[in-house]
Image (tube, rainbow, N blue to C red; front, side):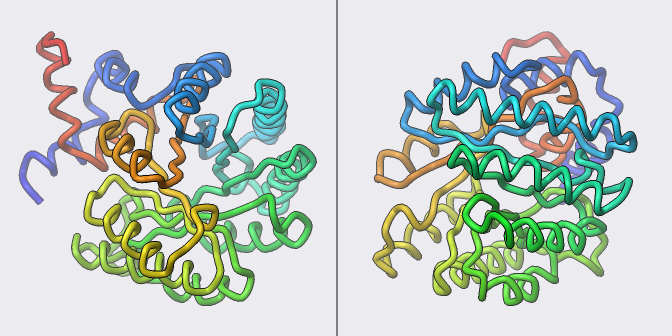
Length: 301
């Protein structure tokens, strides 16, 4: 990793919030549900699906958990009313995981139950390794009640991912496979770029081979090619997988994937808690930090 990349990873919190905000406009729909709806409609018009993330995490107040549940129920109702092709993604720590696992499980169940009622779907996001066991327990519990309305995420940089996937495969699960963005100790995570790629492909192919649904979440062109070749070799129906990308990241690649006949879903975050999300994205992709530098010196980007 270059000196510049290390400066980005460890120095981003020192960048003034208004400067990060200028860059964040690319990656966050806005602060309100109205902003998200406009962005989703634009994605749908371009042929892409969406998943809505209400920004927020590490909640320690049960009142905020209830507020988050209410907001997600409103999102689901709005998606239905507007006829938008979108589902939702939820973070367990926003729904009380760090308060009590049972509180979080009940909150997730309430959101998934509404999604199931509306014929929609909820993706339980995966956070850092301290949350993995509880997140998978909650996924299993909720899936028992609503098997077609909930999925989870596995991260290819975690050493445990292949074992976790082996345990889930009998369920024919709906899994988003991604690289992972949290800073983890070497004891928990692979650090080599090519090893993380290889683990991504290995586990993606296991999902496809065992009748699961794969959300192939990447902006890495090699991994996009690996996904395309994997589904081609297996002659899979396009309804058994999808590609997934973040809002604002490589829209040309997004158009390429869609033009080749694959389904693609764009992750559309919104909310007042955009700053922690934006800092993580900038740490994940140091090349984006060039936009921050340009913004800091007043150059339009």
